Image 1 (tube, rainbow, N blue to C red):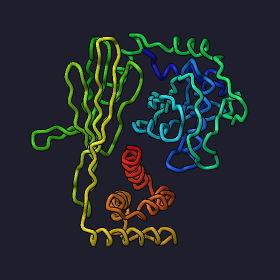
Image 2: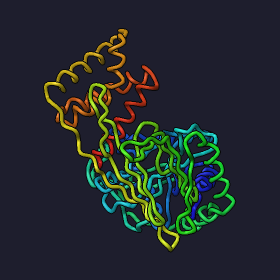
Image 3: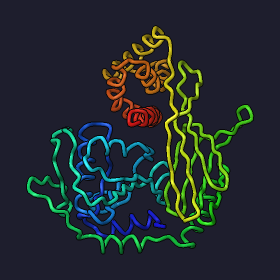
Image 4: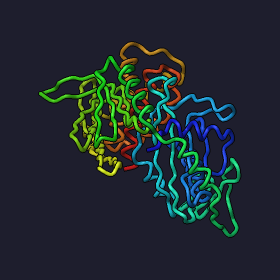
Length: 377
C-alpha cells in the first residue's frame, strides 16, 4: 500500500514538473476557465503516460516546492466532470493528504490519473479550448497537438521506482496512529483495524439526539495511506461500523431564519476486503428543502440589499451582520427553490465575504461545497 505523503515527497524531489507529474498552488473548478485548465492537464498527462499513473500535486509553491496546503476538497463527483468533457476519459482519484506542519483545515491535494493506453481528447468546447483538442506534456507544459498522435511509454520505469519507494510499513502506520490520537485528544479519538490490515482513525465532538449519536468537527483518516477521508468543522455526521464496513452519513443545516433543519447530504461506505483491498463509494441522499415563495422573496431581496451595502463600503448594523452569516445558505436555499439569480448573487458575494471576515467566508465555502456536490451528481 502506497503512503501518499511519502509519494508526494518523492514526486517533489523531482524539482521540476515533467511529463508524469504537475504541481499547482491551487485549482478552481467552480469557473469555466479553471475547469478548462484542469481538464487540459488531465488530458495531457493521460496521453503522455499510457502505461503508468501520472499525478497532480496541489498546494505547493511552484518556485521552491514549499508545502503550503489547500482546503480539504471532498468532491467525490469530480469523475463526472472528467466523463462529461473528455473522450476516452481516464479514471482519476482526488485525495487529501495531511502534513504534520499544516493547520488542521489544510491538506495537500493529490490527483492520480490512471493509465488507459488510449488517446484522450476534449469532447466539447470549454473556455478557449475546442472540442476534439488533444493535449500532450512537453516537459512541464501541457501543449495542444494537431498532427498524428502516437502514445509512447517513456515513464513507466521511473514512476514505478517512485511508487515503490513510497510503500508503507508498520513504523509509518504506528507513528501515524499515535500522532492522530495525540493531536485529537479533545474530540474522543478512536481507531479500528479492519481485516488485520487497514487502520482507520477518527475523532469528533459527540452529541446524542433521540438516542442517536452525531458528531461535529469530524476528522477521519486512513493512516495506512496517509489520506484524510473526511474533514468538517460545521456539519453533523453519523458514523456506523462493523468488522467489514465503515459508513459515514453527512447532514447539512439548511434551516431558515435561525431554525435548525438538518438534511441528509451524502452517504459514504467503505468496504474492506480480505485481499488487502478496499472500495469507497458515495451516494447523494440530498432532497432540497422547499419553502414558501413569499418568504424566500423577502429573504432574497434582503440579501441583495446587504450585498449592495458591502459594495458601497457601508457599515452593517447588528441584525444585518447576523443576516450576513446566513446569506450563503439562504442564497443556496433560494437556488434550490428555482431562484436562478440566487446562484449569480452567491458568486457575486464571494470577494465581499472573503474581505469581510474568515467566519463568513468559511460559511460561503461550505455553501459552495454543498452546491458543487449536488451539481456534479
